[in-house]
Length: 248
Picture 1 (cartoon, rainbow, N blue to C red):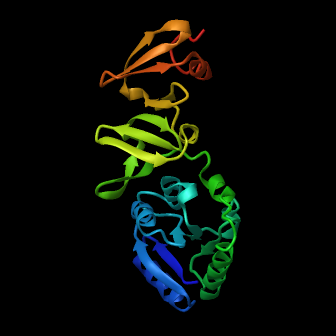
Picture 2 (cartoon, rainbow, N blue to C red; picture 1 turned 90 degrees about the horizontal axis):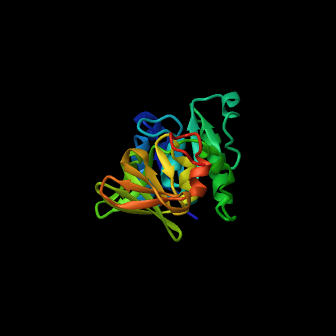
Picture 3 (cartoon, rainbow, N blue to C red; picture 1 turned 90 degrees about the vertical axis):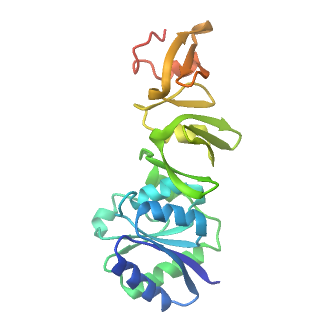
């Protein structure tokens, strides 16, 4: 099978070198390039390559933030390209994907491509990719609108609401629907800026206009636009001590 590859590196000479070496591998088509992390995330969504050669250190988003922005479940096969030595690489588990050390050797690139090609015939194992982004706070989320794909800064979100297998992100610009669970999103957002108020809703703290005591120990959360949510006693108990509110 012909492997469709996206090359993402902020250095043009590095991209040219990778393109040249890929041309010698055979059954490989370079479908695009990206010069920074934001462009990489957008082109992954638009082009759906089989493989991304992804530089770890790039402007706007680093390689790991690209994975987080696109979403582990939607990422193609990834081979990280890095200037770190092998000892530094032990700090992040890349065993389930692969990595290339700069300067990249043609034989090592061929080996990585062959490994990816073999793995594409097996069910994808996302465990290692998930471990790479676990614990890293989200800064941007890849969303789509009529103009195409773009990266939404998380500080633009006022409310995130669960909707079956999706989460709807409400912003001043409108709402964006992304695939995923509200629980997974809650784990990646900064708890100093966002609050999960009930099973379905996460709000940005700066978007809250008023908190009103409600029945059975719940609170009514009034947002800046006048809409209201219920902050359930169960979820208040989980954040006890984080806010100057009696949660007893």
